[in-house]
Length: 328
Image (cartoon, rainbow, N blue to C red):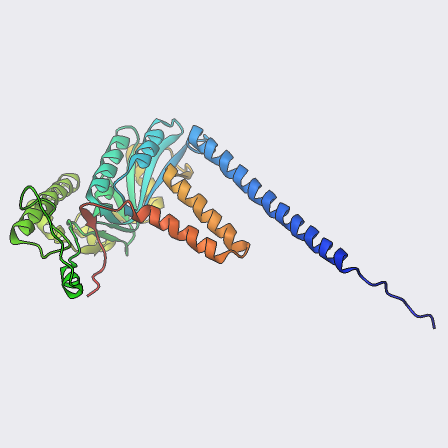
């Protein structure tokens, strides 16, 4: 019986093969990432030029999700493009937001009112339209909400930390020299004085009056109805109808149907998403995080996701029209 002989494999050849495999893997991954980047760049350029990839007549959907920040320029630019687009017959403002800064909510409200001068606009509450989110909702002439959506939380909040007790425990004292007693008040380094608290309360009360005036005028409420609706609490969509905070219960399709029936928008048009540049930027970060996950770089993926959240959270400042469940 003939004996089969095996040639010994050179260790250096094995190393070369492994090195070649690593190079091939690297270039394959680089090629895939380059293709993704090219597609994103093309889509970004096409969207920036034409508003959406296709110019067919449609109903535009603009989503307002999460915290409403103070800088609304990108959203203003988006609404300007939507208002000028001949392919847009109507607009659905889809809201799922607990609110945010009062300045951001005010700016968003005014941008939607400007858009409503050019296109018929309807609001669809797809989850929550509370506080600043509700300011956004009432910018449209008609509000449709799901039965279990949350609406309302008509009120204003000013929060600030008091770390004076901690500083006392550490034996740290903060000295200050200022031009007037109410300058730089409230301060986190000492308890708030009655005068400073009264000054802050006057700002909160004035902004609250502004909020209530918007609601009364936009929702056509009398003083008794406004008092019932503006206690600061949230209501379900079902409750919102009886309080006149919502026009009807339904889906996004019902919101589009209102555009068709009351504003003369052609029937059965497709609904297409329009996004501000800021959200596309965040989506690219999310895509990069997903790619990092796929290639096993879990820490990098988590860092990318945290950076996207930080970009939004860092812009949340000032007086708030914001709803959140009590932690007590």
